[in-house]
Amino acid sequence: MPNTRIVKVDPLHPAPEYLSEAADVVMTGGLAIIPTETVYGIAANMANKKTLERLYEIKKRPKDKPFSLHIDNREEAEKFCADIPVAAYKLMDRFWPGPLTLVLKSRDSGKIGIRLPDNAIAQKVIADSGVAVVCPSANLSGKAAPVDFQEAIADLRGLVDFAIDAGPTVLKMESSVVDASAVPVRILREGALVSKDIEVVAARKIVLFVCTGNSCRSVMAAALLKKKLQDKKRDDVDVLSAGIMLGGGFGATDETRQLLKEEGIDVSRHQSRGINRDIIHKADIILVMERFHEQRVLQMVPEVKNRVFLLKEFAKIKDNKLDIEDPIGREDGFYRRTFELIKEAIERVSDII
Image 1 (cartoon, helix red, strand yellow):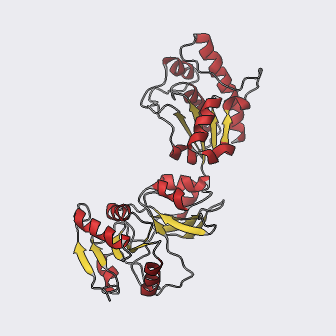
Image 2: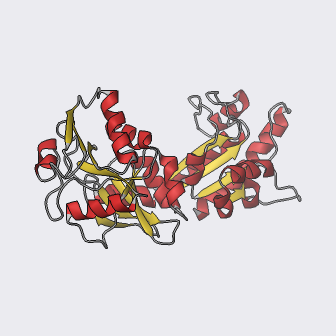
Image 3: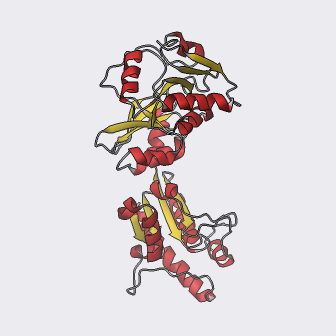
């Protein structure tokens, strides 16, 4: 039986050496009690079979109940999960880090529970361990999950190798568990998050417009669609825009502001942003202006191929070109023609989403 080493830390300013020590314990096959924002958990190396056997035995947990994986950044989810649905990415974007455990398809054709805790201590221990970490609640099966260190250590003193006392947890409630491996998502356990909030986020549609610099074409399209949806009293769709250029923080062009102003739309506060994997993953439909925008999106996230379309496909095409060309640097008439083409396409988009 191990002699459990217990250290007390300030939850806001924990001593780095204690977190490193906990990470080393986990990495080398030991068990460490650590805090999360929900409850205290027992961190263990998922790849170490002997460690997992010991963890099952200590918790008196049935072997057919797998432990959930805890990660320190969202990108880690893709290393362990396969065929992640759009709804799952929406939930990650809204609730991670936080008290949400997602059940997804694993890369070994089964399922896996995964969570990104909103706790700096837990994130640091997980990251520094350098291994895949499971972290079930620090209690014996059948007992309440501990929301304070004294509850956590009561039955586990002498059974784990290391324990961090960071006082009571912030939320004092277990995470909500959602099976997001298929559509629609299923709430398996309501915890710190309200089921209705989860369902609303998962069901919302997201439309993403992409151009080059996110200062004219995608701005026009997004603004026009937002107005159309507002006129239709639709509040279940989020409309986003981005550019394939990495830079951001620029406003809409003068011509774009003027053309939209004529429609009663003010984009004076628009700030351009570069596209990234997170925004691509969570979009239900991605509408690009030119083929090279589509190529860039698919270079970043190939699996969204069936969700990417050229915006001009939704307009009444009068020629064989499907690109909506960049009006920047062109004459005013070209700007207006571009605007009218986008406006025409948005009419149809607003009817089908």
